[in-house]
Image (cartoon, rainbow, N blue to C red; front, side, top):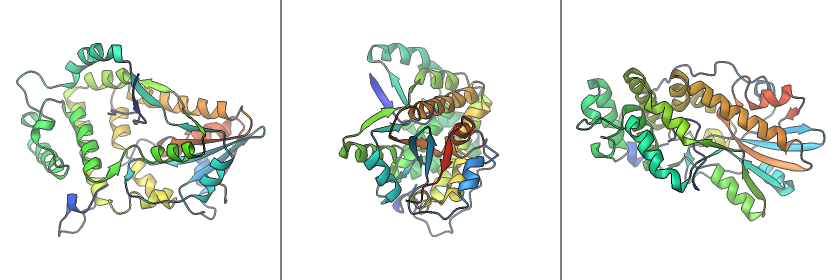
Length: 328
């Protein structure tokens, strides 16, 4: 299998000083209200307690089993240094580490996959992306790809939604941000302790690309706009985007996650909300199974699945689990 690990459940596929050097004041970027308007009751209750050092960690207990959940918030700066005594202690006791779902495409299926879905993601023959964009959107796109150090040719054959999320990923890479972190860091920590690492499941990339290929022209432009909004937001918050997570500042992290471009795009189009719900169910079921095994399990779960009302933590509590925020 060719595994594309830890991609968000979205179109799947922040910023260094040289990339956005400017003398003007940092702009204020308003991403608007995100899809999850209500806060998790569990998160709201526990965040009023004294905040220990390091990223947010929750302890879920049921029938003697213990599950430590670390909330992840990709992307994070490549050079971000962070420490979590709670996580280190949990890993020292654990026998299993769970990480987010994988997306995979079999080697033998690759050619058919591209042929089946490629046409719906690419511009018609003889058409070019930037030539098809409204003037204001074209100006924003050109500015963003310039900041990402990319030319027009990188995206000219893609439809707007795909181009937007490819550009967002390229922008983050140029800015020194990693979309694989913090999961890749946790995996290294687990490997050093010789712990078993297991993905909570898989999802088909074809489900994502099928949605992208059926977007209306209006939806294509909407998804491009929200991707560019996130480029601007990440750029304006480049000095805090990793620090907020590393210090467990959930209020600041929520400001970005409430309005995730991927979630806003998917919840706007037919079939997208169901795809996100599938990922939430898959993750909750994996956590439930972990609570059936003796001992200690550590899991890394995207904060986009933890912070909203009826998220993973709320669902686990509804199933009889006790949830606390460990102090040490």
